[in-house]
Image (cartoon, rainbow, N blue to C red; front, top):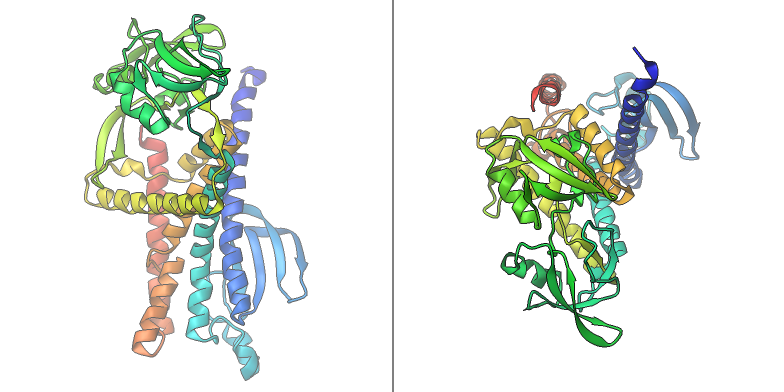
Length: 446
């Protein structure tokens, strides 16, 4: 076997692993820092803050007596508080607690007031949500919003040399349909002819003129979904489909119709990339997609996302508006995740929608390969998922601890150590079973 022939695959694997570890480290660090800092504010002393598990690679002790360390296996992390028997803060170190004075026991997780323990545990998921909002809001603020009138800022090279639309043109109408912004452009896209060229009324250098350009939503790839037919075929953002099953392709909707009407049969495509044509044949996969009714619709997909063919000029977005959009994006993800889980439980959609570590790692690498902004947005999305997962009332997760604290608040006493041990073992078995199931999905699901 030629070792050099394996170099590209090895490089891709390392890139995927590195991207996954980077995303995981950021998310875990923020999650655990939430536990640490709120615990400290609540008077609970942290003995160890660890990124990773296993042998310690580097460590230092700060002025508060907390040892900050980096361990060899970067697949998680933990904060060990004073008096904890383990990293999960589930059991007490009876000997250590008995050796403490009454006042010092107040600084243990098990001796602190109920409100302090509750807030300390809750802080991990909350910090994940805060990270998500910060990322989404920052990206939205950085991008800005398309200004009116809709103006061409950047335009990539396209296969039709007859295009006379230029960067800097302010679009007034397309195909005779008045245009003010992207929303109005989207509304009229179905009314425009599926042709190689469409008339654009634009303002250029103070004069209103008519020029020609492609359909606003031509079959241009803006993003490739990981683990899709398009991703496996090596398609990438910027590719333009010029033929579908031998017929000319002028709009993204033509591609959607051909794929949805394929019933899973291979679709023959001609792709234009950087002045070169190439032929690819993609076999669509069935994908469960959320719909406007809160449910899911199963569609045939090849895994490409389209958009308007030019980058519009943008105007600044206010900080509060960006923050509001960030919060709405977080809520959209949480709502969609809960809906998806419910539909999997009821059998309405396939359980293959649950990804394991391999699938998440592949998505990490794919998003990183499509640009820093896509990767950062992915980190925000994954952080939201981690925060939500940790709120589920399953022992060993933060939500399980919160459920125990809720019981303590109502009953006036904590569950017995024996009950806690049984529930923690059951919770651990459930979590491990789900991890194995998700890993099986990564391996066996198409």
